[in-house]
Length: 83
Image (cartoon, rainbow, N blue to C red):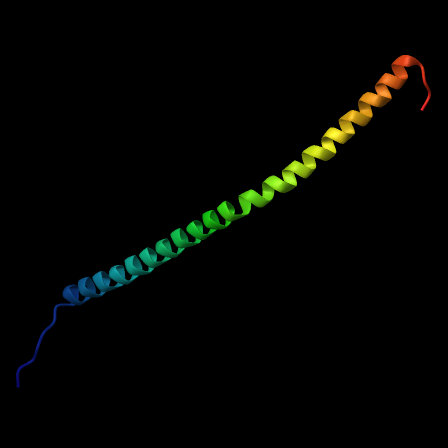
């Protein structure tokens, strides 16, 4: 009967290489998933941008109305009229 002797260093090396390959494959898959997530975020941001302009326009109108009211009050104070 022939006995097949496998060197323990060869087994350890082969196991390490297989483990390293599995870890590398998992990291590459995670990296691809992260990139896809970032692409989706950029796509959502690009779609959302025109809607944000509308709310920014509304905010600008409110700020403009506030400024006009402050100017009226300052003009009233300057002319000596009580509000």
